[in-house]
Image (cartoon, rainbow, N blue to C red; front, side):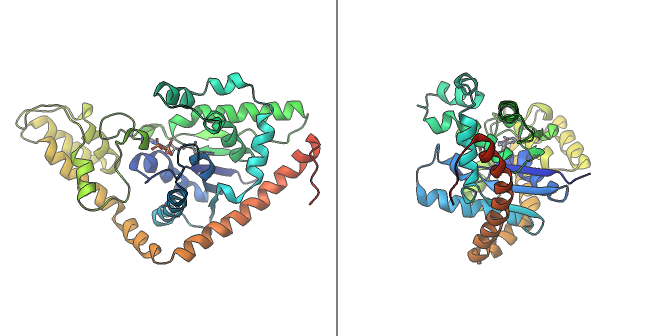
Length: 327
Ligand code: ADP
Ligand code: TRP
């Protein structure tokens, strides 16, 4: 059996949060030994919402630091920036010529953004096409992502199928998504899905007062301190569950039910769990920050490997589509 290709991307549009970690990054790192892993920073995708060039560049470096600190091993997984593989935008254009406008109009994320009052740009509209190219250009088999990406992967499969039928050959491989059900949606401080767009995030690498504040701001109901509480309906407990062992969870749940244990106590326990869980990685990140040249090298090396693979997939596609390439 040949090794499978695992691929995923993450947008560098802000500080990574624990929803990103449990929904995506943890799986990326765990899967780096399960096949030929490719992980990239989707900087072109971020352009649809972030137009501060310095910030986008800095976020790209920061996300690389985060991944390296959290255990991404560049010897085992290919880690790179989307923009280091020009074949991706080339394929995205070709796929776009096969994409019905109606397919994009059904995009849940696109529709949500319009409903929220955002005036959409074409980049946002065609976002799933670029994402499909990201996946297809490496002949990826498995795409580990959070639940919210399911539709984009379906669109990707649809487009791969359309291309293969149109040009009568197995030029593109149809990928499968890999979604970890138990942590499919990590709640944010307001109980909605944790997301940069809702300003309800808890960062992976937080420190100091602002970090404590983000945890203390988690919304809870108004049950009095002395009264018994239901752990299963509480946001703080939902987050504690991500970090605590089964025994620790049972112990804390018992305290909730007994009464005399306030949400403030639970938040302090959560803070301790988070600091403990990411403590080692935070120290590693601080070391890596001192050697940004190394971080840039990781991206450059990853980009080189990714380009080689992408060109192997792209060459026959250009040929069959009749696209001239004179260099
Ligand atoms: P955000 O919603 O903060 O903008 P992204 O859309 O950049 O996050 O998501 C990056 C990755 O993290 C995706 O694979 C996504 O599914 C996952 N993810 C984001 N938020 C959550 C969450 N609250 N719970 C689980 N996974 C999440
Ligand atoms: N849309 C993804 C997100 O917001 C990021 C992404 C871009 C991606 N291209 C991808 C994820 C390809 C998986 C595969 O999280």
